[in-house]
Amino acid sequence: MPVIIVENDTSQWEDETGAVYHFPKRYQTWLAQGTEVIYYKGRIKEKAFASVRLSSDPHYFGRARIGKVYADQKSAKGDLFALIEDFTPFAEAIPSKIGGEYLETIPASRATNYWRDGVRPISQHNYDAILASAKILPAQDDISEPFTRDDPLTLTSANEGSKLSYFGTRYERRKDLRVKAIAIHGLTCKACGFDFEQVYGEHAKGFIHVHHLVPISNFGGEKAVDPETDLVTLCANCHAVVHRKRDMTLSIEELKGMVRGRWVIEPQ
Image 1 (cartoon, rainbow, N blue to C red):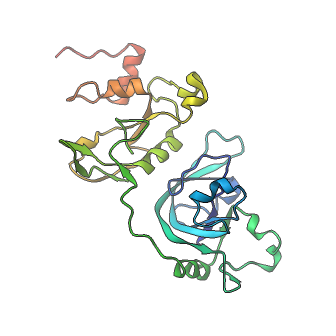
Image 2 (image 1 turned 60 degrees about the vertical axis):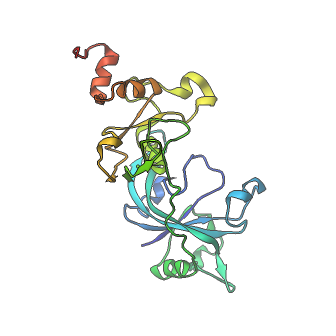
Image 3 (image 1 turned 180 degrees about the horizontal axis):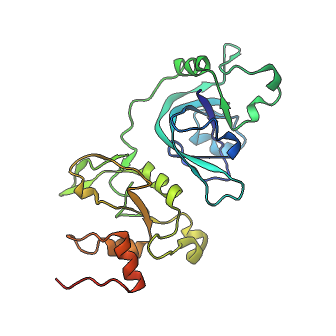
């Protein structure tokens, strides 16, 4: 059964549209992996967000599919989060009501509180009606970046490794996978445990490097990347040491051993 997922302008979670979606455990049954979803925003409450919305009125603005679902380890309430796959934005806002009729069928028993739910299951008929009104944008090229502001070594690639001509070769990275990797692995270094926010405060909140366990340069072309198994979060120091030598990328276990002082590289 398709569902509507509501994205608020402000939230307790720092999700990124089309990458990660947090939700309370009561919605777990509806947000199973593979579920087709449509993104929705309610009426604007703070005008400061007007420039980043398609409309100030309630509207649908994109479609996607639920990927893997994980327990939120930072939540004491049993909250979860889902990775979002194949997000496609709409070119224009689709209003919640067209011709005086809502595009969602509202049960009579929910007439007064239907719109309060952050996740709403809908019929296939409702889903098709919303999409029939939508103008789908073509595939976006700007989801990829050669480098990120936070991390010049790290990713920004599900498929990565497209070559770009730039005084040599550099490799295209998918920025949505950075968000997914951080949601899964957290913001502490998986080699030494360093936490930027804990040490530097608010200024460094959300900062971490994301490392490919297999270097992009070894892909030999595009390759599907799983943020759970192919990526890991590292502090800037550990990430630099991993890539210290061109012909030798350290494993995370080797890196941990160096931190503990138990692993020694034999002289060449």
